[in-house]
Image (cartoon, rainbow, N blue to C red):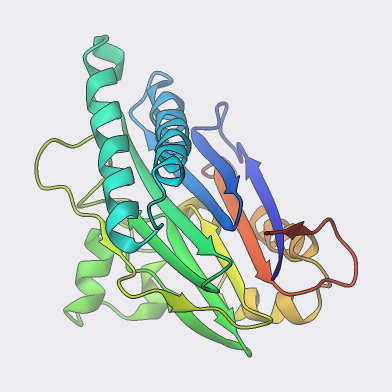
Length: 259
């Protein structure tokens, strides 16, 4: 199995980038994580970095113990990141309100399957054969309105309360973490995308799919989508971060081959 990976992270129209991302590998296992921090006074970037650092450390422990990167273990990893943020909140008043969304995605090359977990409105997508096979559901007010048929899908991206979240890491009570459940079988040509709300808010899913057809590498695809974010977003727009994972052999790019 061959993977192409690429990432982009941009401060957007803000003075500080409070997003973070990271990748991890061990033999036949691969994982990546994207986090979007919040909290003010620079605490958001601390929260998102805690998520990425904790996730990478916990992935190492899972691999050392010979455990699978199944949905239950991905949930445990995000719970550890939640605990780590709560511990860091005790360091000072500027950090006491810091939170972070997160999306964690893992591939087992031997099983040729993927699993994921997420909290908040950082998303995981899978596109296959020109359709959206996977789109995680946000822990947000807008998502709850969509689920209750109180809001049309075309109005969701621009709703004035679209940034109101019902769950984020750094929460002692009422924490919600969603997981993929059974392993998702991979297919040649699958295109996965992890991205913060500052990214998906300004690129429609149809545009994401269209850009796959005109891109020969995961990096080119991500560059094209990032260009659309910059073109569509208003002045002063949010940070945006995304990681792309393509399954299959590219025409040109650096290949991560799991073995």
